[in-house]
Image 1 (cartoon, rainbow, N blue to C red):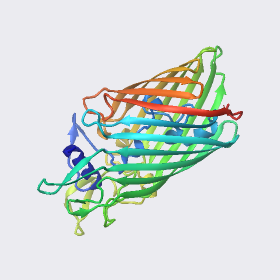
Image 2: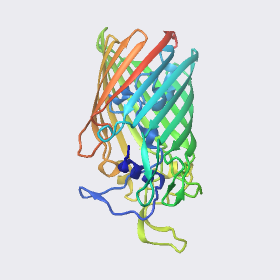
Image 3: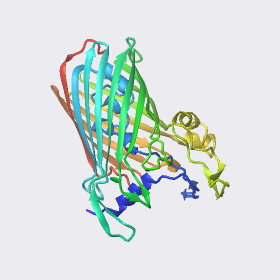
Image 4: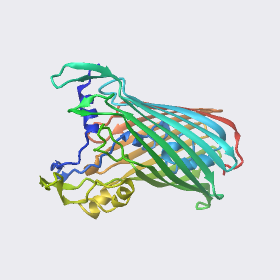
Length: 397
């Protein structure tokens, strides 16, 4: 099936160029969106978090903790489990683009857990054409990432995890794009995560649990889609931090409230002049040179916005979520995601439901856009299937 829109999208991803930046405005505000390669790594893969505004850095541990905060695995209740999630993508336009996610965890001993996951993003079938519009073949572009983590309890309340990730992105199947030979992009990355949880007596009439989490994900080398390796792009290194409060209303009912705060730790695009330097590079009018190493980019991302401090603050996005449980069997979820107008303008509400019976779990979520901008997940139903095996662990508090 031909998808000219998707082909244009694929080419733009591959040929990202921080050249002369046009003065693009929306509602009177200049747009300066941070772009990276493999945005796949930032898509929330599971339906439980999808029902809570796509947040989960401090939510209670489950089989899908790898994406949100792998340090939670050491606090998980069961000895072993796995999960499968499916997310349709751009369902309003096509029916064969999707994200599949499989995760697995196994407790090694009372204080440590191993977990792994695979995410696979298929762009369906795309017919590539030459400069004259003649078909040159039908291909199936795809991307995937394989993760593994070791999570360990360091104290009664605190856990730490380190995760590794292999990233493979094959968007053009080796075709020539605008005369440039392309190849699959390959990168490796790491996550460093922390999780803290404790029972608190803040409310006299009910028990409560307070938790917080931090996850710096996708710390890794740049990725290239060009056979010349001249042009390399950042992967989406991201800081995710936030708290959770769970209230035990009575023996049968509980409710949780959580907030995720996100910031991409990659350079902000500067504002360029129309002219160039003698060597052909663009002259920067405001901001800083984004052609730096990944570690320098992480540091620079805190102070390089051409709009100064106010623009740096606009680079934070927020996910608000709540989850109600009845007898640990039925869950109702709601959430809201907010991103500034100048940084992508993703704003949407989410709804979700979860069911648990013995070792079996099933989650669904639905996204409701609150802006006129199209969202690739609108009018789609995400689901996750989960199995938690083995006896309850004594280390779970």
